[in-house]
Length: 453
Image (cartoon, rainbow, N blue to C red; front, side, top):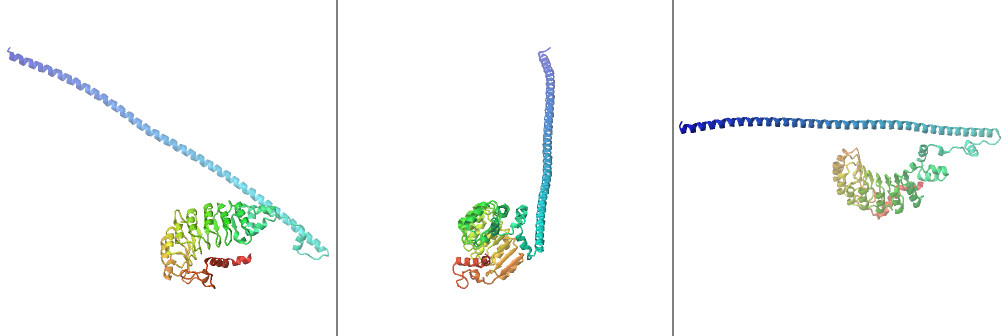
């Protein structure tokens, strides 16, 4: 054997040996990798199943909690309904029982009064019969009633509603007189509902200021309506109205002593006013600034013949919350108002139903166009003695409203000014000063009342 063949044999043997061992190692390695991969796959499947179960359990748990919450709310709602139903039954029974007792009491009072009336009639008949038998001259039934004892018919025994209905027909002066009869009548005149509306205009020449202040101080929580029309009072008396926190209607028209300071106190103390009449007073722009600041729910406002505020004062009504709920606005006789102020006012007062601009001689056709744009709900429009508003514009406006009053004649002499808004100087018609003009209008308005008083 040659060395070359030996080397070839050794190389072949070595290569065969390496090939055999490498294949064996490769097979072992592949086997181990498959086992590891299978193990990893099993663990991955297990983890995936666990996460899936966890997610399903979480959704199931949330669903159960929601159902429990719904069931709990449903139970609470059912309990609330049952409780309300029980309360309704209790209140219904209580109301029926109260009505029954009240009706029974009223029937007893009525029967009692009827019995007293029958006894009184019987005594009257017996008295008349005894008088007829004797030789005395006949007496009328009224005379017999005066001779006989006073019948026992106490009005204080009537139901409170009947007493109120009786006293509602009386004026303030009569109520005060009734309260001076006796203690029972005084208690009847002190019913709180009787003082919801106080009209001092009927006793303006009789009652002094101190009694007005004491009355308002006593019934300040019950007063809803106050009427000072034509009263000549001190500013302190007007300020006492600010204690009426529940006041809804206030009439201070034709009060020459009513000032901006009085209006300031009232506006700060009575923010719930719905109806306000400032006609023929001396208010200025200060009062006009107070109205939108305090009276946010004001619905009826009368500024007739108030000539001391300007266009700027009228524009104040649109400041802040403003008087945007106005339904009725009276500006008759305000000769200082121009189109610019009314344009801004009509842009904000969308709920205005009634507007009176009679005697506003400076207003032109432009105001009617502004009203058509801004005041869509306008129903009644009064334009008497508006000399600068043309007939054609008024005819076009008449199709937009339900009722309209218009004429372009010159203002009558008792208005106190001519067609240009200048005050009249003739002594026959009206005095030159503005204060005397207001007094003249006031006198003509209340002459009948003064004669009656």
